[in-house]
View (cartoon, rainbow, N blue to C red):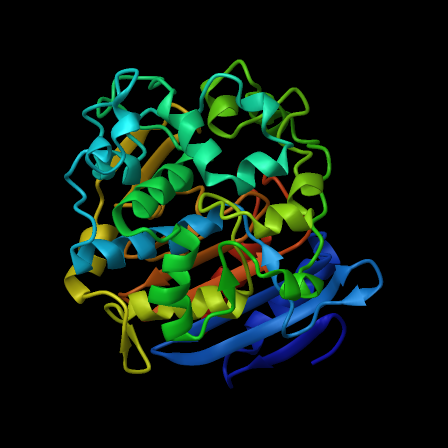
Length: 391
């Protein structure tokens, strides 16, 4: 294996390593890792490039993955629901009474998981976006959302809850169990499965985190027009807590160690591709991995089944959601299988399971990128190579 690529692939999966190397040559990759399992066996564990200027990406390097974090968050809620600590059909206000204000009294956990609650932001969110003390203060986060009003009548439509998804679920978990969502994830998922993935990074691991690089300016007219919708005057911008600087200048905030320490279950997860792939390998095998059961096979099927489909009021194209997980669309890098489910993140990271083929994938880059319509993404090229090897 040469050039920017290190790691290994199983015999017959050499094209995956070739695709990984090609991303550095032709798709602007700077530093990244890719991992895949098939039928529980590792078939690719690759990394390469630079984690920080002049610092190579190592096997132990982790990176912020933005909304790919919603997959681990969903699995945590799944596990708690299966234990009886949460009931998806109960009102959020049953756990968190203050949430009932401003027309939110009938919103359920199921509404949160399916992006139908309409609680995408709160007045004055722009004042806290760059204030890491707010992100670190879960009481302040809860108070902010308790005062929020839905942007549409809950349950009548869906729109991607880019920032609020995990923060709302996190407060429910905290009220119901006394544990933060990050701590619950560590106890129920990460430690049992041996995952190097954190929702709230311990400070002693900070030197292993790659530095993000903002996406280059859009040159494709359609992409530029779409990115212009990420503005504080639109639902698209509000749901992502966008300020006047837009969506292409987020690396600075998410390169702060204080932000890494915050438990931001919508988009603050930090981990490696191997961890994402291993987590989804458990889901691809009905909730179990190496003899460790995280959730039941029935839970996996329920959460992966389509719960919502149609025009997305926030993302402005058709989306499909299970209970927390994204489902395949032309905009998701989940490969060719209609059985796949998982979650992607801003800039290109992704993790998913495909139970039909017993495939699990994790991909983590530090160079962020916004894909133009019809563009083969870095993750898409890797996933296509993987599935080609299965033929």
